Length: 354
Image 1 (cartoon, rainbow, N blue to C red):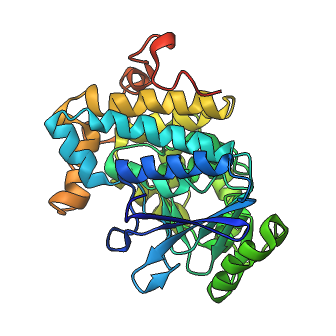
Image 2: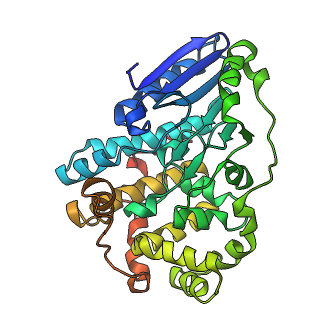
């Protein structure tokens, strides 16, 4: 194992702690490989009845789960033409598939930040636990990317049009919202997590808490408006509807969308709607095509994703120069180009996913 991924068998539980707290446990390629290796080993280990995973916060265990992939690495690798960038996504998506199809109960303690790649290693869990400190999102449109790691698959299976809403806006939601959106199963007090973590070692799968229904979801209050507006056929129609609505919520939502990559808004709307009829494996193959094209259709600094990461995490000027600059300027052909696979079916890097 590596320092950033701590793994131990304690009683009946295989326990994983993501241990990169200064980076909010953002996933590197070595971390993805370590996680894959330990999960494959434990699948065959008779001692392990249940697998639990958590993140290390800055003040100790819990408090942060995983902020996603290491976007600074994405930026550097894309500009350098580093082949490790493609390896990262192939291996990360393979890990996501493994989690969804894991043969033993897998329990994700989604306390604190749970975004991007963190969702990829949590959404396939048998039991997804959130708290009042949970901050969950798929915020990729902020950086000119799309909700990957199976995001098309799990967001498209949220109730109504919540999937389109969360994918396009990148809205950060709390624990009650996550349960309401079917992106979590159990809402607990953060103080209850250490005891439950230990209980799995003693009781194994018998410690699994039952799924809950919760009150207090802010998303629920806007469901009718979300379902109405985010059923629009195109991004310009969606924006026009929000901007004509007159409510504060609609105005704020439209303003948020206007800050995202206009091109990626078109791609993401298509992604979520295609994913509704796909298996997880086919969705991940589609997303592998998409992420390749995000970095190669416009190479280097011309990439919408490289520009988005530059603005957010490198120069930190928060002024991305999106191209095109407005959603109304994006043509259908521009968005459709991202869905063209660069590989014949028999050579796809994820051809082995069942």
